[in-house]
Image (cartoon, rainbow over all chains, first blue to last red; front, side):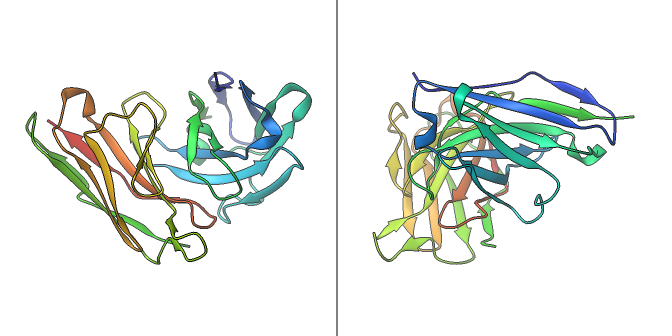
Length: 120
Length: 112
């Protein structure tokens, strides 16, 4: 059974760093891209960027480029999303999602979401 | 970026009646090489992650009830719930995966 299990909720202060995780199971992680999707409180879905776990190639939505980093540790089937300096506007639920096939594909499996709260 | 616009933003439908949601893309998401529309529909219930309903504009994901149907091509797409059930109360999103950045529509809230 394919599963994406995300790390738990986080409460951080502005300026702090953070890394959240998405652990994949039930399939070979190098075979499918993983994306991160943001959902701000009461709002819609925004695609942030993605990684090809096979070679760690990434591409980002321009509005997120330079503010977040997506990485992978294939040895433990885990993809990460990290910030070096959080802002209040980063408060949101973050979902990881698996691309169903090649480089341009819909999302067939989603993690349960990680709530990140940034507040002083 | 491709802009995805859904209509309406919300709709209320009686149980057993039809619900229709429209999604329009600012450019065609029909790939000429494979003749596929790179358009998906998701359902999101409160407190849950999105759930894939439809891909390639009209292919129903395994396990999705057959009352959910997707149609359209090029720039204009429709999700139809043929007979609304109580469990269908949710927000529905279209998404283009024709190119990055992947873009979602703003969502349509379906209520009873």
